[in-house]
Length: 78
Image 1: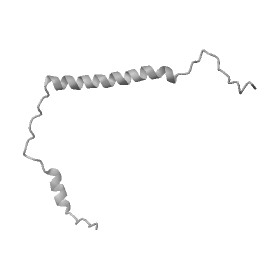
Image 2: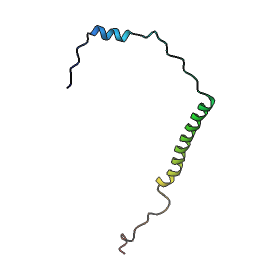
Image 3: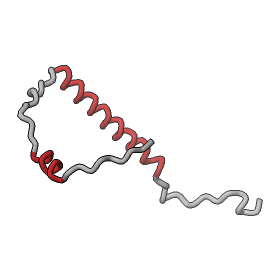
Image 4: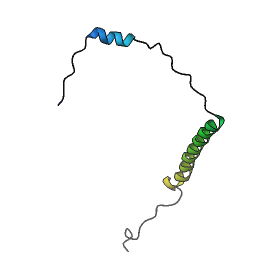
């Protein structure tokens, strides 16, 4: 079922590390104006959504410190 790999001579591994391809990759094509604008718009939308979530969520997570602590009726013996 599981076969053991055959040992590979160390010289072969050292040779593989030194190998460099003589084929150059094609140059990257620059995106069109619409593609670049779309990426910027998407990024700005995501950042604005995160900032809005923090702004809207901050009051819900903070506890009011100026108001006295309210006690329930059960703690007053009612």
